[in-house]
Image 1 (cartoon, rainbow, N blue to C red):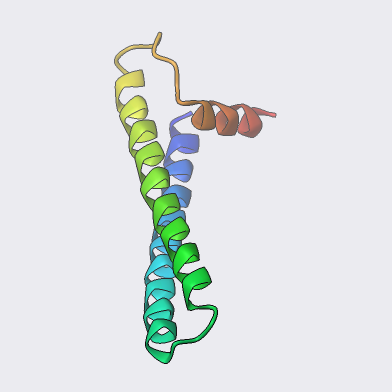
Image 2: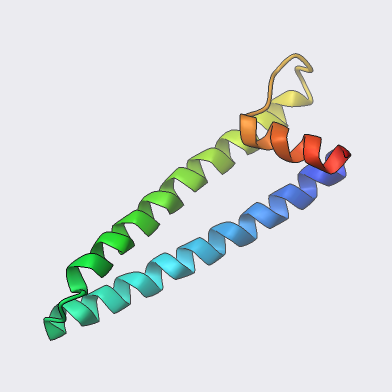
Length: 93
């Protein structure tokens, strides 16, 4: 289980870095589109907001999962967040 959590932590950190890079690149592209007055600039800006919101929500879920992992070793009755439970069950099968 510890190895699964370690692998999960590494995978999630990679996903967070990737999503942060996508969000940053999207912000730069949206800024360029806004300056050019391109018709898609508003749509792209909306997508940037969505990407940033996804990053914030994913970060919150990851932090909750890490907190659960730290507390779970001390309290075996503590239930994992649903996404952690699903990943751990999938890795067992």
